[in-house]
Image (cartoon, rainbow, N blue to C red; front, side, top):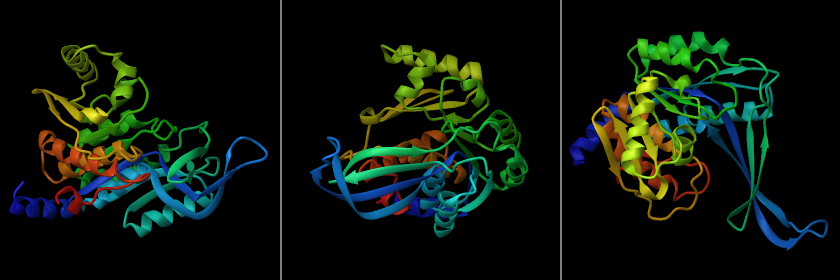
Length: 314
């Protein structure tokens, strides 16, 4: 892309708006030194020297969008607890507009990772599965926000926050907005009518079964798209790059990562970049290599991370 084209795109991104809806969480890291094995059990003893909180889940998707320039709004439901207050503060620090529903029965999801000698030693999850629909009360916020946005992302982490996703997709498409879904589980009827779904290889195999050849993969994806009226499917293939399946066929780009350090959150970066580019006026096929580049950047970083506009277009 030429320098004038990059400058034009940057201006379009800064004027764009993206709405993110889904399961937000707090990624909490404890960094420390490992110098001995515990006398109580054959496990390393970590002497913690630093703590760090980062945006996770749908909140990390929103941060990735914001890092590229667009204004972003996050709609999610959190608990009435300390992680929720920390999550809200981090969103404000990063200039992310947030519409947070608070549910006293819900624990705000926290992923606690203990890091020693630059390696993750253990992850501890704090969460509960809600026994009721937690996002239904936010539908009015959703309907109010959709008209001003150039793209909508649904970030489904299977935490119960997107029970009404089918209705929200229908309303967003009725407003002529592109809808992008980071899917979870094998039931893609929930995503019927979406513009783009972005599974990885394991997630897609859970839906269509393992494939033995590219023609077989293309046939099964075409059937999946046709059955659920999904315009396009972007398959992230790790070291094999990614593939876009749409009405015009199948296009593929190779992986861009020079060194893979941590794949945590790479899928968040890919869908965030695709949405940002669509909101800025690019097509899916134009956005795909840019998303591939952004994904290659974040896997070279530790933990949940982002790729800035300057990094992507360096």
